[in-house]
Image 1 (tube, one colour):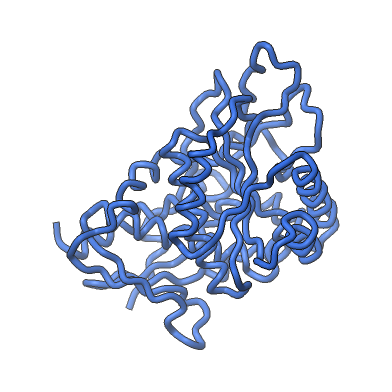
Image 2 (tube, helix red, strand yellow; image 1 turned 180 degrees about the horizontal axis):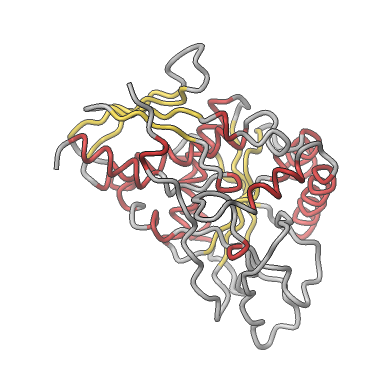
Length: 329
């Protein structure tokens, strides 16, 4: 297989990356030994993501997927982030070389096709500390930190922050219209959030839901485990944070999100990225100072846990084909 064919195949795997509302806000330019990643500003969610944080973070996840897919083909990736100065839409240029590929990146490759965003109740089985350490190490490899939301009091503060974000966005101009638009895509559309991928709150759930409220929810919750009176689960909540808070940090946070989600999938864990609290200035500050109480900047909350017993396999979410996201010279 030629170098260009290898790069093209890797970009096709990068299209499987998660993105806010499955908007897939990226464009790619493929050359003989390089590939460029560009933001697709036309896919910005103005009401949901006014500062483009979610959009750039989504592109960062795709960038990391690309690096993983290249490593699986025995190729090394030399990444220049924000290479074009005033062209803020040109997020990265990746030079592709032969040589010793990163084995830790290559090990994540099988998880690309297996990963799903699971919005259902998870298991009551705790996530082992050694699994959480693996995820922490993966985030650190990409230049970010992964902080656990530990203890009942801290989790309660996070729940309050997420609830406040949902309340504020409910009245934000354009937010409801965007949610409607991206959950009611046209027939044969290959983006957006399908009702088949969203579950209603489980019967017997005792707390406020941490998940974003979508207009339609048709995904069945798994049956409640015997011996557990509550529908609550043992999912862990982790927060990706960066030292600074500019578009480069958002891009790197997206790379960390990809690494954490793929590693968790490889361990057999279910995952849910939660961006809502970071989309509102007030709740983002609250997450930083009131919940985490750290100087670093939170970029994304990630929910991880064992899939609940009896949970059916999640459907594959649609993706745009390569032709529709390519930039031509």
